[in-house]
Length: 102
Image 1 (cartoon, one colour):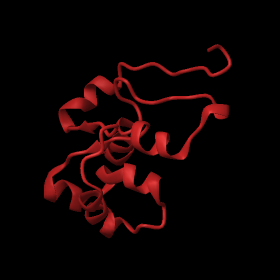
Image 2: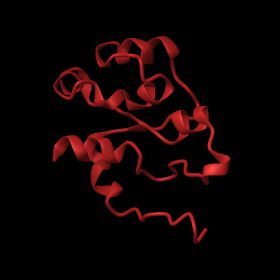
Image 3: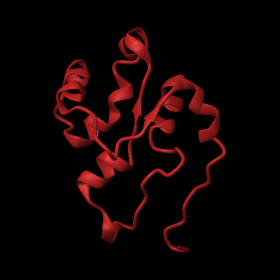
Image 4: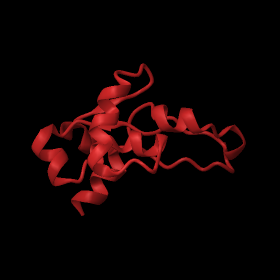
């Protein structure tokens, strides 16, 4: 249940990027539609680096044990949102988006 919550929060946060299929862009989805979840060294190790999920979106071939290195080499990106464990409760107040009604 914790793993699902950690994955969920990385895509559901205030001002997360959502778009119609016709507007889908790989880079926008990677940087704006997924976040960096800062868990500290132990937290990243215990979760298999799930906090670096945005790097996984950039390139799914990067193994989880290299995600932190890739994150550091890329550096700070202006479109990347950083989240913390304290942000988890706020994610559950967000609503679903119905593409057909928008």
